[in-house]
Figure 1 (cartoon, rainbow, N blue to C red):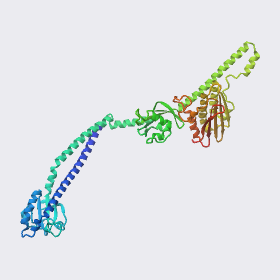
Figure 2 (figure 1 turned 60 degrees about the horizontal axis):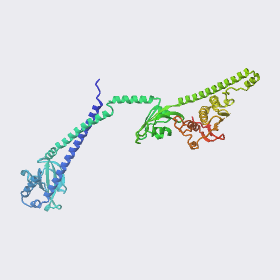
Figure 3 (figure 1 turned 90 degrees about the vertical axis):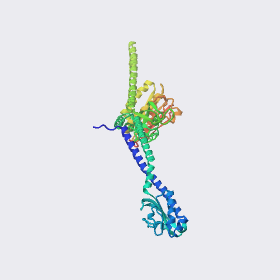
Figure 4 (figure 1 turned 120 degrees about the horizontal axis):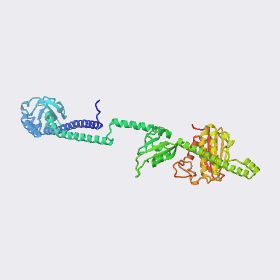
Length: 523
């Protein structure tokens, strides 16, 4: 199988061909324009000569002589030689020659039609006469040599087409030399362009480039991470399937990044976040990393945004927190039970049998992990979550009360776990030992309302208006995984056409009220 021609030679030959075709076309047009210019120059000169002869009084007066040619012929020949023309012919109204380069033709009728000049018009064109094919001009000759009046004859001057062609050809060498030089320069320029393009594409051939593009597309779209590339104009140049899935958006390519990316995600893209920041795409937690859209001088350079799904890890962390809370509760329960056993043992050693019996009757080692009758209304998932939170509250020394009314509808049970879990965790972070935390859940067929309030310090008034914005946290502001819990709660509530409201609790701390309608839920 013959080896395919390299890209460099393909570019060189293609550009050389284009240059040669353009130069040939330009040459044909240039020669045509040159020939037309020469012909027009000859015409102007011949018109001037013919009109000058027609207005000579001596020419018109000679028509009254017995032998007009005796006067007209010498004058015509002098003018012909001085003007470098092939012939100057003067005729009468009948077309009889009074002058001609060949004196034997004097007195004969002209071989071409004299009617146009005899009608008073100036005519120019190519005709074949006694001297051969010539380019000629014919003008009327008026009585007395004037410019109007009775037409008594005509004046015809001309030059052979062969002489005109020779004049055109005499100028061709310089034109052809210029065209040839242009072709040489164009070919060398094409060679330089081909070499430059080859260097710009790292010496790769078209097949190799196609393979690389195919591999890039395959790798890009098979990545589990979302990849979004934005050009210097802020328009999405490419986005893989994972990015479209994670962002929950339609086709991204060709759209402005500011229009299709949510505020915090777009901020990560613009500013640049190489270590990663936890953001929300809808209700999906993502880790976003980006190179930034601007260089150190503030010039737009475009950037790349990487998105990693943090949903499973986020859920695993929350489950681990729950398990840790349960473990801490069991540990506290076991510790308190061991202490109680020491008391019982001491009483028995002292022989205080009745006191030991009373102590055992009063003992509630470690507290119960059951939330009581509320578990039936809250459902198994939420009840299990609150059981762990209840154990955690005892470990922290926080009084945690749970009030439930009505059965939680299955339509919001899953979302309610996320809402209550985030709000209770935030309350734990805000409270200290001795504080009070209260949870109230009211459910009916239309939906669920949740109120979480505590006796902690409350929310800083400076953050009250922004506490539900993504990235805003009342805790460590430098933590990259903070500032998504309350934002997620608000997004879940609004997806159900509900909302969450922050107010001041009668307990002294913050009060979060959430409404999750069931009938208006958007799936």
